[in-house]
Length: 164
Image (cartoon, rainbow, N blue to C red; front, side, top):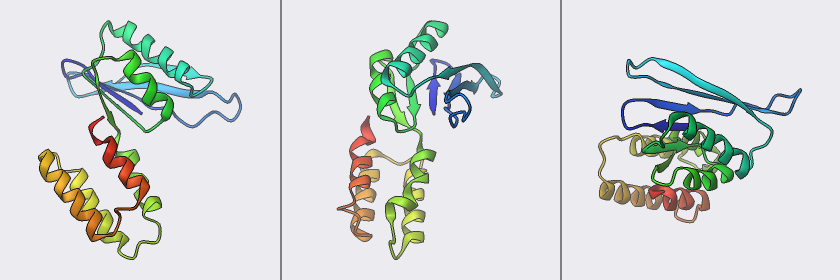
């Protein structure tokens, strides 16, 4: 999913849906929020692949239609998108869509004895809109220590990508 935040209050999202079984195409709607805080659809596109080239083409088409690039782009984690975004949107800040990441927590925690406690504390940390960078980093470190997640590769990678 992409969320593009323009200079003013427009927010648009590009969410790929599951491939159509019949045609093996990826349906990608561009939706957003207008200046009246209503959801609108900017357009839709079918992609034949989730390649860097396909996403680059799609983002170029979006940029051409809106005549400028967004200040911020929020995406789900995908290697092709991760590579296409900075090529097309050179000055945009790239962020990950937090909902998709948090959906992976239970899988990445495995059979952790205190999974419920970990999930609660992680959610409290990542959904805190007013937290300062230093506070986030120290709280993250404390959580990783408390729940012995320092060696968890996925959590380490997420932490490294926090400033993308």
